[in-house]
Length: 361
Image (cartoon, rainbow, N blue to C red):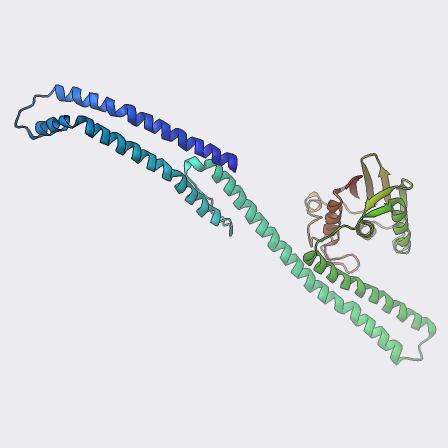
């Protein structure tokens, strides 16, 4: 913007100098032209115009001086007011950016470049407001959905516990079955409650890194091992390609959450009887982690939004896979706090997340 202001100031100064030159040079030319015209006329001593011209000739230099001083002063004041008028235009246009509207901003021709920038800012403001409204609406919908979903596992837990309490003659097999179902529903209830905490933490807190040296190889192997029981439900297997003893300075709790989220997503959205490939590779400059699974291809228009707050890949809201849509948004924030990048690629019924972490934070 400073560059644009300098260009505008130089343009006004140039116009001022050119106008002054035209005025200063033009006055003598007009006088010469007036004298030539007057000399070709026949004048009479009692002609009022002749008397006026004669009296003006007596004060010729005073009149010329007055014209020059008045003209230069008027031109100077006019061009001094120009920046103020332009500034008023810009200020008035800038006020509309607080609440951007669909109407295009129009400024004086000299402010063409500033007009373009203000209109770009206006369009960006409209887009940001729309994204904020959509994000807020998605969040509100998810809170309503989660509040509703809390009732289902809670009702089941209470129902099965009531049966266990009121039916003392149940067989050990039936009692074990009801206990197991109640436990599973209680786990689902805990998951949904944690989702509410995720929403609160994401909106009310700022992520701060607490770094330490961590063995990423061991961390990933341990996380994969903990998912083994869940893999059996869909008959999935891990294909691990982890470089040994990769040490990295990071916030271990936050990175563990990222890896946990990516692996959980891979499990939820994998076809049954397939492999989940997880790799960890170390170079001199960076550490790369990839999670690849076989599943339904994510359309490009969705993959471009997959890291947005409250965006849910599972639009059907299945109770087994539907979350708040915060997991990947939080993962992206954590990776960026580590000055890294996270990307997703999906084609030919494969979904691959890639994390690049620099060696030095």
